[in-house]
Length: 214
Image (spheres, rainbow, N blue to C red):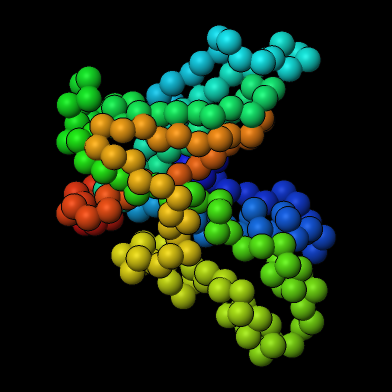
C-alpha cells in the first residue's frame, strides 16, 4: 500500500539481521517500480465494503479496492482484504477505470487487459539466504547478484527498465480480462493482492509526467 500511495519507503529494521523472507519483501522490484513510477500518481480507493463480512475479535472486517494510473498507460489495482476470512474479491473494469469517464464510458473499459501479479515472481527465500550469508568477496558477491537476477536501479532506472520491458518490473502474467470484464482474485484474510494491468496488444496511451514535459 505504501508503494502505491507514493509514500516514502523507509526500512526500520536492522539490515544486518534481516530474515530471507523480509529481504524478499523489501527487495521486490515489481512493487518498488510502482513506488518509483515516473507518473507519480497515488492510487485512490474506489470501493469499500463492510457488510456481510466475517469480523475479527475486535469487531473489525472490511474489504477495499484501490486503483490508479501508471506511466505508459498501465494501471495498478490493489484488492485489500481486512476481513477475518479468505475472500474471492472482484473489481470490474468499469470500477477500475472510474476516473476516466462516467458509468463505464472510458475507452479502457472496452478493451482487454493482461493482469500481472506483482508478488508472484519476487525473489525466493533460498536466493535471499544466499545473499544474506554471502562473504565479503566483492567479485563473488557480484556474481551471486547476477545469479539471483537482482535488479540494480543504479545501473538501470525504473523508468528506463519499464521502457525496456524489463520483466522483473512487471510481475507474473496470471490472467487476461476481456473487454468490459472483471478482475477476480482470491485474497487471504488480513492481506492484499497487487496487480499491474497492461494492454495486451493495442497501442497504449502514455500518461506524461512532469519530468517528460520539461
